[in-house]
Length: 101
Image (cartoon, rainbow, N blue to C red; front, side):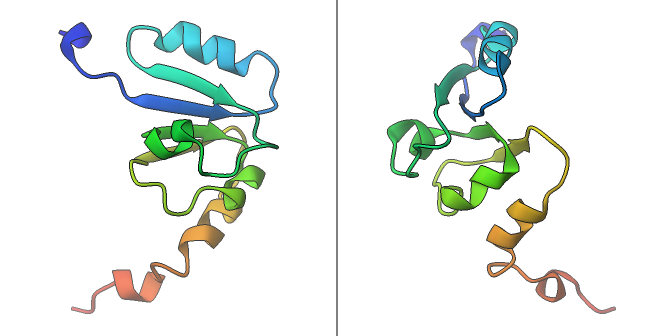
């Protein structure tokens, strides 16, 4: 049953009005949703460190995203992944992911 499964911790960092309340209402039985002010986040907050899922505007990501121990998924609130890619590109280059046959 879904109620027996552990609820993932979702941290929402957004300036979009009502997004947190909408996500909380939709995920009430499936996830533990918390919200932080993205303009004040340092990346050291327990909510960020424990988060498995982060929902945020991509332009905030470089400020705190790298090195989060439990992070499994990042969802941007608008299109474009340039900010996310720039964080991870030093760690994994495309050439090292490709193999020659």
